Each structure stands twice: as structure tokens, then as C-alpha cells.
Image 1: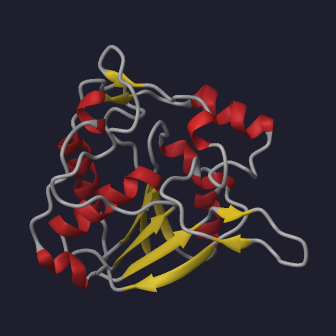
Image 2: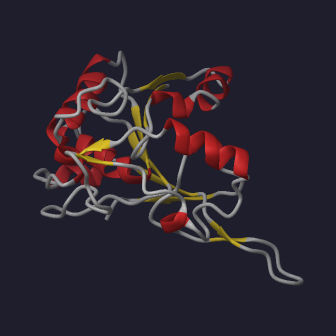
Length: 209
């Protein structure tokens, strides 16, 4: 199966380096996407540029692909389903959930000089990062790419109700700390730091409604 992989904020396609070989071993054809403004140096990129990059990959796939969005890019995956409902086999949302029409894409943190830098680990303390060791945190933070303001503050626009016909898979990697006598309990949290760092997950098939 063709699988398009879209990393979340501050990440480029290298976030999927550990995931791509595993998918290939299973016989899939994964493609990790480079988003405008997140790995190509285009600091003036807008959300529509990132959507266009995803749609170009959808259109180039030889078969209907599964579009995988991580964290904030879950909204990008959903925007692709909205624009190409007949061309997408399914959508997978990992560590996030798409925003509704009319909401800002990812206006979470302060922007400086036209970009939204990685704010450090403080805002992600808790289920989002409890299982990350210091080496992993340092590696992710040092590689973080500031997100163009035109992407973060742009507005989500959804138009085609047929997006709800596209099968959706939710993967919820965050989890609560184990309690005495009780194992870890997976929970749904809105954002997760990097797709190569998951250690606990659960998934639910949903209709998209």
C-alpha cells in the first residue's frame, strides 16, 4: 500500500526514518513528505503550500494511498481528505485530531521574526513526553525547525462533506503513568512530539464523524 507520512510541527521528513524501513518490510510503499517551510528553507510558506505538497503526493501515488498525519499535521491529512476524498484510501491520525473549518491551523505559541520556534519541553510535560529520555529530548529539540508564521496562524478551510466517507484510523500514543496494581492506560492527548519515539499506543477505527 502507498503510505504518505506527514510529520508534525518543527519536524521534517527525517522524523520517519525509523518508521519507513518497518513499513517497507511489511510490503508497503511509504513516502515521508517534506513540507514547505519545514525542511526546505521556505520561511514564507503558507498552509496552502503545505496542503498543495500533500495533494501533489496523493495525485502522484500509483494507487489510492493512506495519508498519515502526526500531531498538528493530522489537520493536514484531514485537509487532504477534504480535497481528494475519492483519491484517498484512508486517513491515519497519530497523536492528534484535526481542527474544524474556520479554526487556526496551529496558533499555539509565540511567533518571532515570522516563525514559531520550538518552545522547549515545558508545554509538553506530562503524557506527551513522560517516556522520552534526555538524549531523545535533546535530539528532537536540536533538530527542530521553526514553523513559518503563515502556516501556524493560517485558517483551516474544509469544503467537501465527502471527507467523512474516508475511513479513519486514530492512533493515541500518549498514556497515563501506571498506578499500583493497574497497567498503563492509553489516553487521547492532542499533541505528541515525534513519531519515532512512541512506546505505548492504542488505536480505534472511526468513521470520521
